[in-house]
Amino acid sequence: MPRIRPEIESLVRYSPGLPIEEVAREYGIADIVKLASNENPLPPFPEVSAAMAEIVSGVNRYPDSGCFELTKALSGATGIAGESLWFGAGSSELLTAVARAVGGEGTSVVFGWPSFAMYPINAALGGSEPIQVPLDSRHRYDLDRMAGAIRSDTTLVFLCNPNNPTGTYRAASDVRAFVEGISDDTLVVLDEAYAEYVVADDYESGIPLALARPNVIVARTFSKMYGLAGLRVGYMIGYPDTIGSLRRAQIPFSVNSLAQIAAITSLGYPDRVVERVKVNRQGIAFLEQELDVRGIEWVPSQANFVWMRLGPDNAALCQALMERGVIVRPLSDEWARVSIGTDSENRRFFSALDGVLAKS
Image (cartoon, rainbow, N blue to C red; front, side, top):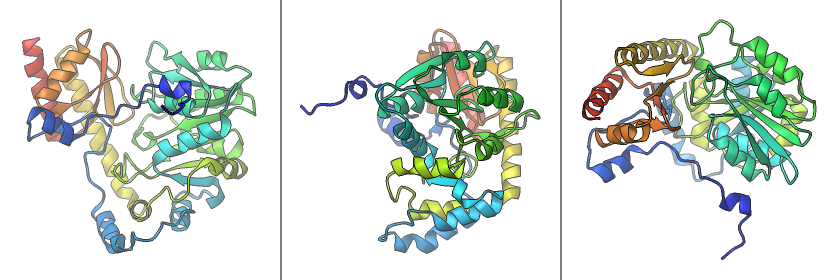
């Protein structure tokens, strides 16, 4: 047997929401609703599909590893200088590259928990000790406890805002105070994968902090709001020197040609993003209302999913839902996450849930 690093051997692999095809094969169900992976239930904009079709014949060539046109497009849309932008195969790839760049023997990584499942994996891949800090009583990142958990060997801190899987957030003033209290040689990643969905008045992106402080970077993605999850394209924003150093840990050609043109084209329709935010909030309101009717505890969400408490039978209930063709995500002993789908998908979820609860 090859000699695998002990921390890799003991690592719990990332477990994505089961794909529709696998559930169909396993249970012989033709009509399946997937509400487990926080995907946008709406497809890419029609212009995006058309743009990809135009260049698909050229995929025999390697993509532009520097993402020149995508950098130019995002810089134009946001006003952020190109040297502060870094693209990757989804923000997940960039999180892993960061962990490799600043990790190593004798280092540690601090993050809240429960949170994005890639964080402990990132720590292991970077050769760092993971330090999980429990969320506060409101299911938010506990920034005071986070600050207290940071050690002299901590080189990396992940702060998911809004947090996945709870949908909670920390206000701009809280994040700013937290960042300002951290040593300049500790890198803080503000993971804002769901930032486009936030409607809270006191939320603010950490981008200004990242552009002003060399030890702060912001992670964003095109997977959620723009419906490009299957193409894998995300980006980070940060101080130019920091970005320049971190990207050395990235493999070349990670953002494929179709992903690049899809992201470029998507940026041309900001009005449609506004409309998608409205549709998502309608879905959130519907889920909250219907969970209330059934007496199921839920947490207010600023993302495109809801964290709900199904109780001690959580795993069994989620399994029963899947057997009825509705996939949700159990992520703790009593809590599960359900993504916002289309109106019909959301209603299908509750129809299945009622059937499951009636038998429990």
